[in-house]
Length: 208
Image (cartoon, rainbow, N blue to C red; front, side, top):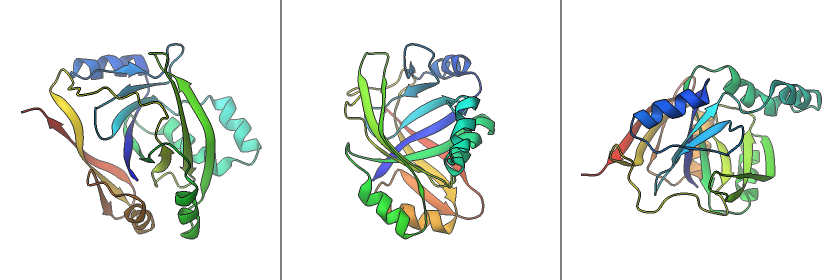
């Protein structure tokens, strides 16, 4: 697997899109009507997702808890209440299933919720289908199969000269670090072991 994308939680999506556009990035909303996220794609490597809080209404989170999905909702509640900024990572593989990776995580005591039929239609009218495995421990990055239709632009450089995310440094505990070392083969992700969790730093690569 590889580093798939980095989530930046925001409290006002429209304002965040304007701010990131002013920084010289090309930003597109996740969907045309009532978007809850926006994407900053690069031709290669991970992309950035600007996500307005959890993206899930409070009533939906409450119903999920009533249905016994409290551990699943812990991640979404974290996104709902965390401060604005870098909040989460997703690791990904090519389109397909995640059964092998889930079986490995289960063997090392990391459980989660598998969502197999996720999709959205983006602003270009493309239907993006994918699967996610949301680990119940939200300090562990969640897993995703890449979109069946690739939305990334080809040979693209942002107006500010940035062409890709070069490195992401991530702090997490030993258990999660060990699991990531087993699952991920990507020099972009540098895992630091310690107490707590956070995205320590992100480096970008620019055109010369």
